[in-house]
Each structure stands twice: as structure tokens, then as C-alpha cells.
Length: 115
View: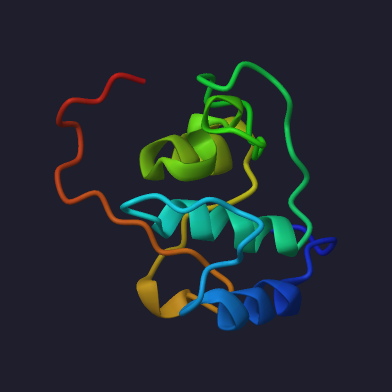
């Protein structure tokens, strides 16, 4: 979305840590959104301060209880990146994806949404 982001740095980070997690970050059982957030931070996404349970905040903390839900929760990340901050946008077609783009799918739209 913004030219200030370094997409090549995102790609390089992904390649470097895809098989061996970066030891500077903790891992979770289902780690894809945590890894995605690390990639985005490597590419220049700046943290957004706020209550860690608020989908308008995004940051990594030294402890689990000081890290936002948006950092490691897929749906929370979506609400932060697309709905709250417009750091991402919807594409018309999956074939429009380019390197460093993120694909998220909701196989059951509208089910159990709390936001």
C-alpha cells in the first residue's frame, strides 16, 4: 500500500526465518500470524500503541501479556491491517497478488463475528 514499506526486506525476512524461527520472538502453536507480523515489521510497519486487546493497536511485547492480539491472531490482524488502519486492501482477484502480499480467507463469513 505505501511506498515507504520495504517489500524486499519482507521477502528476505520470510526466506530467512521460514524454516527456523527468529529466536528474538516467541513462537505459538499456530504461528502464521505471528510470523506475518514479524515480516511486516521487518518491512517497515510501525507499531501502534494502545490496549493490547484493541484491534486498533499492533505491537510485540517482551511477554505474552504485553503483545497485542493483532500481532498473533489472524482475525485480529485483519481488523487491524484492513479495517482499522487501511494498511492493506482487498484485491479483485487472487491472481493480482504480488510478492509480499498477504492472502487471508474466511471460509465461513459472518459466522460468530464479534467485531
